[in-house]
Image (tube, rainbow, N blue to C red; front, side, top):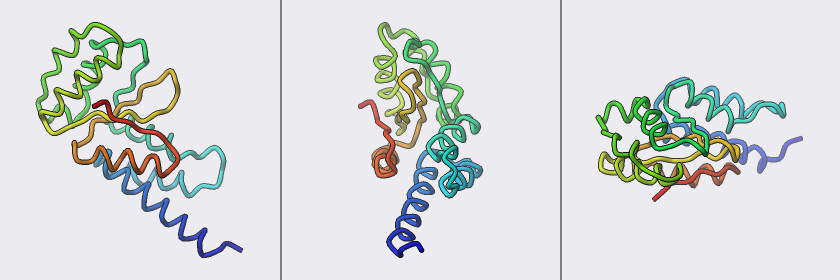
Length: 156
């Protein structure tokens, strides 16, 4: 028999996953897929991976490798609908010399002028899934990810 505390914890987690989805993207299919994975007791169902996959399916994710350059980052970010709609010019990111993190910091600074920011949803050491969110959503999204047992971070 489940305790009331366990049920309350399930409802809190469900609410947290729903809010995280809202903060990261407005695709209507994202939240139901993540909630299904969160409710599934099967060990193969991972709501964090459902979130990353859902963002990717919606075109809201720039999925990069650590050895990618500023050119790949600029190309990936300009394909994100939120960035495209804002008309952000990321040409300068392609000129960044150095590692991917340096290019992300430059891109994040450019996006900040459009009230946007980059959030890294940590997955593997060899992957950089990046989502662009409204600037005001970043801190809450990062805090919710942490509360749900995952890691997300900003670059500024």
